[in-house]
Length: 237
Image (cartoon, rainbow, N blue to C red; front, side):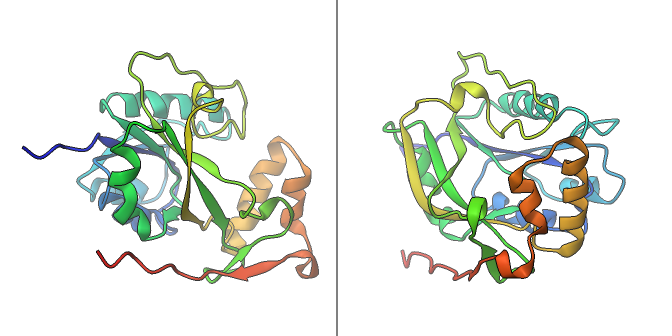
């Protein structure tokens, strides 16, 4: 009898993503996850319709926008909704993030094992389009990885920091010392790729808090260092 790998649930918050990367992101996830739990933050465009068009999506909707009011509350609710799918692992991903194709080849190996409880990936911020990534200062993905894939323990109680913004994508209990695998797989983040998105996101974050990293969004071109995105070849087997 063939052994079935642990169940994998992706969880994703969305708001007004219809004309951005949502459809591409959901199509990609549908190829290798079992469930996609989406929490729609009161979208006013066709975002819910796009979500409903994918059979693996479990859609929940907020009646009023919550992200800009209390991101930690939204993220905590999204986690609880993901728990309802009884997952073995949870992948915390946003609607403008897409793994490179190698994820489809490696996902079974990443989650069907007993050696580690979390996986971290390098996240590349596309800048000024979809061909180059920003690699200067705090934007440099090479020295750091992001913890996005975690083993779920139904016996644990998971909590979130009380922060209005930038509260993190996974619970506090999964951010500390764990046995972690640092994957060579890369995540493409398109959130800063379009000028209109840069302006919108900067205005939102600036209205809540400021930081040197946020202000670097406004750096002149001579201070921005870019590298071309070079797609990796998929495994031949």
